[in-house]
Length: 163
Length: 163
Picture 1: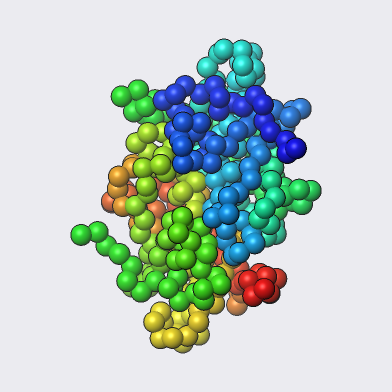
Picture 2 (picture 1 turned 90 degrees about the vertical axis):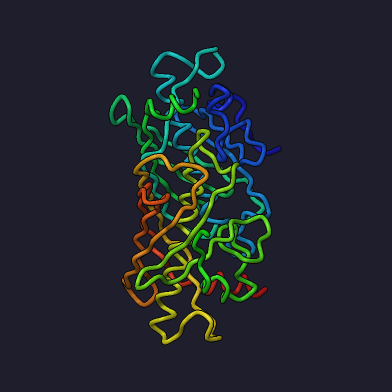
């Protein structure tokens, strides 16, 4: 059986912020990325669908970029939530991050039909800015590396979300 | 009426390479990005669908990254095709690129419900490696900047595609 994230940070986002095409649990057409702790690293598993192709047989880079993007914001949320004394499932609402910047280096073609695993290492840069280094594996093969600068969600987003 | 790319490089890719989730004309579930010349710059227009949301009202960053990704490889293809003495529509098969690396800086939240325009400036680094600097506008507003290092498709892809 393929591994899954049982306690995902995305389960804790309030409904208003759960429509993300990448990781929103309420977006019926989205990817439903789920990010959780695995030791002191973060993980997100995802099996691309057949249409998520680049050249037949290989995964589309934009989907890998999307995986790294949401894995990054989710990882930052997990890390600040833990720093604030909370864990997923304790009833506290986690902080929500947006992506400031995203970098992806494609190491080798990513095969289709294999579950992908994004592994994240999280580092605090400032109270409102966190860096997440990510590696994306297909099985044991490292296919892409990424970096996300995640920024605590600014008020402009929150106000909009509350409208 | 919203602007469109009439002569798109993606129309010229052989069928085997036209399944990309971002820009493949044969991928029924894909985004169908179309990239062409506008003066000496390249452009790709795209209106995100309602599900391509981050927070309600704003476009998902992974879709913007996807737009920049395919805009980058398409722009590199356009540029090398022109360098080789060809233009879209003259019957010659264009070179096909893959993404070596992708960077996206999100300048400001990208509003939903607006046609996006990616504008590319292409620079040759080597005969097989091209750099595309991209800016993504929603109307007149610059929302994201990107950089793609596009690499001429290696034989391993071609061989796979021909199987």
